[in-house]
Amino acid sequence: MSTPIPIYQADAFVAEHPFSGNPAGVCILPSERDESWMQSVAQEMNLSETAFLVRTGDAYRLRWFTPAVEVDLCGHATLASAHILWETGHLVAGVQAKFMSKSGILTADRNGDLIELNFPALVERPISLPPEVLKGLGTTPTYTGKNKLDYLVEVESESVVRNLKPDFDLLATAGVRGIIVTSRSTTKGFDFVSRFFAPGAGIDEDPVTGSSHCCLGPYWQSRLKKDSLVGYQASQRGGIVAVRMEAERVILGGKARTFFKGEMPA
Image 1 (tube, helix red, strand yellow):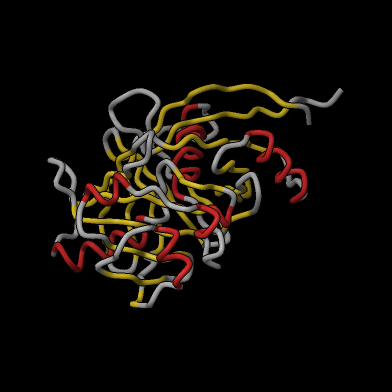
Image 2 (cartoon, helix red, strand yellow):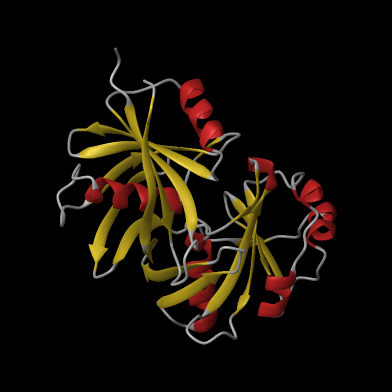
């Protein structure tokens, strides 16, 4: 009889209140599995992303799947993966977690009570949004840009970000992975707020998106003249992402909590 495969769910980039952050599935595999199997597992988990890891030397090959597609970069599922590797003893505490991914080598380290991810900066360039995307957002931006993954939209205030009620059918036609909406924060303790919509990738609204902060970090660094910032993603669950700029890299810091662990058939 085949040995069952362990699978975990962890909340990443959590805030202080319970049931915050972004839930991610983490599946540590003994060997590679085909894409259709991983996609089926991600669909079964029905989370914004499920991460699949296979040990390769001193690193782990890491792939991320939404219930609908494989993605090239995912922050919260990487943070959740590092958390699970340390918690389960696959990696000794204090040893860096090293991942080989479609976005190159990514690392995770502990820094006090935070897990810090070393990710590439995804700098945006000014661009006009397609009319259907503007209509889908239902607001007038103060700035619009685009990087290789997403549109970035700045709006006039935190209240606008928090009160958006997008038309997801229209946003699904955007032709990009997702749409980041952001503004300066008026809430004490945070430099900026954001939300992330990705209906084209099967996720109407992502609870907390590490990879969007690879764009938000350099964007707000240039405007606020700060290398270290704290962002709050104002989804229903909510979550906190600490951001530190280091040349062309972005250090993303956050906390994680294991929600459950189980087994599934091999």
